[in-house]
Image (cartoon, rainbow, N blue to C red; front, side, top):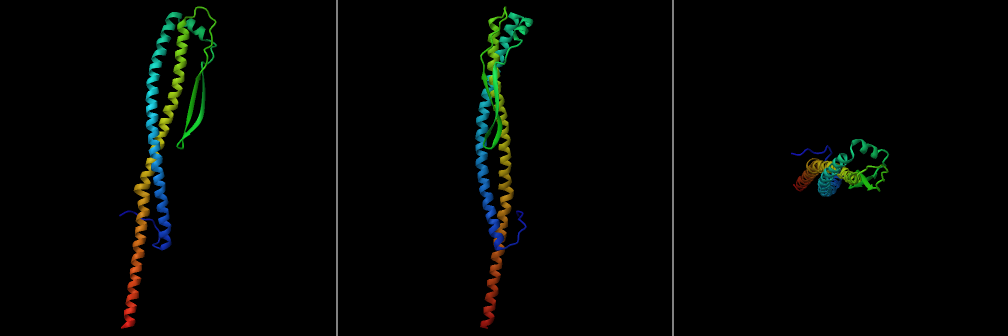
Length: 206
């Protein structure tokens, strides 16, 4: 037997609890729609995350390959001298974004023109390595946003599912059981009243 609400079995209580039960049912339906939408967004973000992760691994391997080449051709000391004073090759902007009520940082990374290096003995592999690292930085920024959004959407989806379960299996059944109990009590009172009236009529006719 489901636990009922501690309310008296009156008509006013029946109306009030009935309205609350309908309101909770509407809330459950809305939460289920939100949960379904969040689930769809999670799968979309998961596919995007996997794609960006694979792209990052490819670009990371290529960037390290060119770093190895430029280090062999220029040497570590010359490479350090050529890198001194270089400005950032990427501009990054972070703004707040919201999706289905879930907030997460949106990261936009835009590549900038590579700053020319005036030192002699620089190799063409140096610029190639810088290009690869610039591409990698942009991809890493996109990957960071996708991963952050994925985890936040997943957490919101789980939280919404818990609320749906609480309403569906605990809260709403309590209200429904209370409504049934009040109706049964009122019907019993009505039968008793009718019985008493019938007894009184019978006594008057006797």
